[in-house]
Image 1 (cartoon, helix red, strand yellow):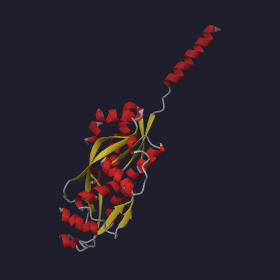
Image 2 (cartoon, rainbow, N blue to C red; image 1 turned 90 degrees about the vertical axis):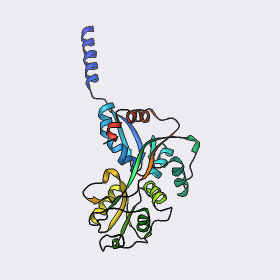
Image 3 (cartoon, helix red, strand yellow; image 1 turned 135 degrees about the vertical axis):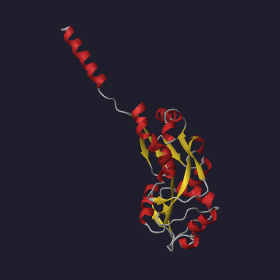
Image 4 (cartoon, rainbow, N blue to C red; image 1 turned 120 degrees about the horizontal axis):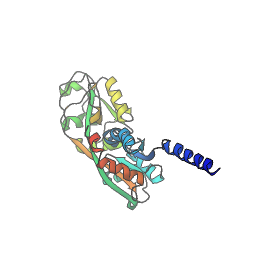
Length: 253
């Protein structure tokens, strides 16, 4: 009798130990810069290597911070400095519950690219030319040595961080044109630029390929900042350790 019970217990233990364990999850709210430059690159290899599944909510830095304050995500990550992030939230009218509760660290860098419809064969754009384009003062590509086509500016509702940094660094803080074609994410904007004659938008380095023209421009960059409320959760800590170690080789690709 005892042997039978022991056999059942051992068999049950072996069966349970052989069953695959559910992957631990870490939930992150992120903007386009972090999604394209970091999380898309490490998501799959991190889960395979250390069993940490990344649940990514790519709603932009504003929504990410709001979700962090609500406890819906464990960290918010955006392509801007902490002071610029806080200023952006205040400009939007969001009342930050407690700035002192935030812990932040820089986990990467993003280089903003200018993406143009492939038929617009301009090889280089100066800051002054970019300012003219995105403020709406430049109306036709022929003014810049390109084809006789109207300039169509595309702006994204989900990339406020990218556009804010570009406005500050390339446009001397001048406002974007009010005559623009609306998009959402950087993926959506690129798709629209590919199919829009004379189209131009902002994007990430990883989006540069044969479907668009990426003229040479000055380097517009910003840090990628991660914010937690209080100390990072165990899941965020594991993710940061992966980024500092094995994850580096995926970020360099």
